Amino acid sequence: EVQLVESGGGLVQPGGSLRLSCAASGFTFSSYWIHWVRQAPGKGLVWVSRINSDGSGTSYADSVKGRFTISRDNAKNTLYLQMNSLRAEDTAVYYCTRGDWHFDYWGQGTLVTVSS
Amino acid sequence: QSALTQPASVSGSPGQSITISCTGTSSDVGSYNLVSWYQQHPGKAPKLMIYEGSKRPSGVSNRFSGSKSGNTASLTISGLQAEDEADYYCCSYAGNNTWVFGGGTKLTVL
Image (cartoon, rainbow over all chains, first blue to last red; front, top):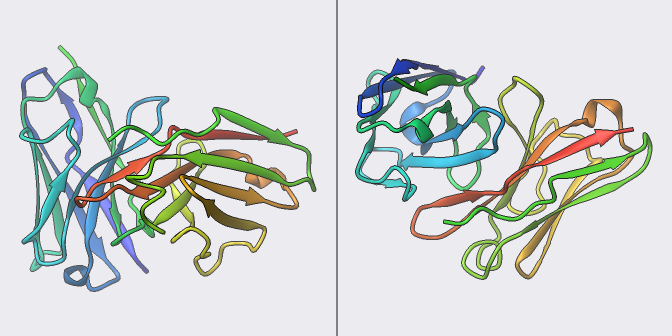
């Protein structure tokens, strides 16, 4: 069974940093692109970032470019999102999701709250 | 990276059909056959319902269908059931390894 389990969310002050993790199981992790998608409370889905299967290619939404870094450790079947210079508008549930051009499996999400 | 445009809400009675539109631009929806649709129930993770415009993943009911014309994609749900009540999101590849979602549509089954 394909599983994606996010962790690392929590309360952080504006300007602070947080690292999210996404542990994958049930499939060959190193063969798939993985994305981060976020959802602010009561709002819609927003694509955040993507990493290709071997980690050599990354891309970001303009709203997080230069502040967030996506990475992966294929030996540990784990995806990461390093979030720096956090802002109130980054408050959201962050989902990791598998897929190339569409997203076929999703984790349950981890809540990040940016507030003083 | 502007969000795709979806109606905020649609409704229908059990057994009826509804269609949700998703309007983008010639840089995203209009340029690629890579529109996908997601269903999200409250407090749950999204679920893939349609990919590459009109393809259904294994296990998704054939009551769900997708299409595209120009810069607008559409999701049609036929034979509405109470369990279809949820939020629906479209998503399109937007070039340069970026993706864009629609704002979401709340479906109410009357």
